[in-house]
Length: 220
Image (tube, rainbow, N blue to C red; front, top):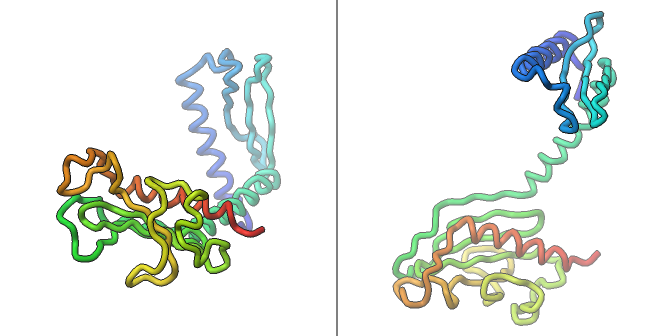
């Protein structure tokens, strides 16, 4: 986090105090809001300024906590570390959605609607035109790596069950897949099969749920 600039610190406290004053002005009966526990933020009059937090407890007594600069830093630095960890986790997870699912005549190949990764796992949402499919690639150290889908179909729950395992043309790794051409699903141009049209986001969500299931079988 580095050193806290005193001027910036004081300006932040003054801004918080001004905003708290506006809240109090709009609701003069704030002391009677227990047990909601409202609070006000302000600065002490003496210098160096400190952060003062006053709140009303369920007993309707006013409790005040005064934090000096070092105490505020003690609160900020752990938060900074936490946010850094969140950012690192976000780097491990990537999601790119290219376009929405559009039902049409069967394509000669497939079209990538979305793709991403979650740690050592990769996933893709592909469209065959007539219907979409979802795929997940597990890391090489996973106990299911190299297995056929029928060996694990009772362990992974996805729409209609797993229907594919192996290599995907143009993509590295081994993949498990499932499709959205089952009873109740709309499959172009067979309009009598069903009316459920799957969106790209719905399939992305299922890919991520499938990864969590695969992850539960990782060797500890």
